[in-house]
Picture 1: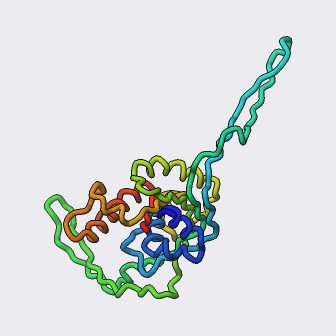
Picture 2: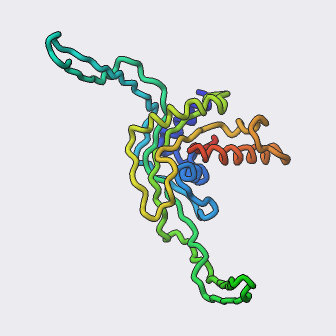
Length: 248
């Protein structure tokens, strides 16, 4: 069994899923789906797995338009038909997860306790320069009992084959997203951040893939530090494409 098969089995098995998708990995899914301020997230990010389907293919339908009628008819009758099963299913996503990512965010800057107005005077052109200095109380503590944000997600997984690189994965990403299009998307709660992608894609790669200096962002440091820097850089630009990145 190769690494890709092992990773897919960990995703399929509810008892092993948490060993593949840890708190940081789930946060990446949230960041690829919502305009979430990563710096405001506190505590562990968790998940609700409503459904996980394996090997979700793209079914190609064939549409036909036809006309018929007699030569003496002033207008021909027209019709359309959609036929399924004429074309073989195409590869889509290795798995699709529907459910939610659960995050807790910090409570802001607290309450205003002191407002100190200032007047720097009026300039010759008649503009008054006024200011207000604000003092805030301590931010409210985020506790386990603090209500979390439950963010609905639909995630299409692509498990990288041995030696598979970013070009191949990028080419497969569009098909994976289209394979996930058949799954309904639940509305986010009113207090949720803006949803940037209704369906995100999650790449699953071995961590050793980032030992390759072809990935940008390695810099200086130990091999482990360079690997971590390359992974962070890749997550940065992939998030803008609606793609999360998980390593095994």
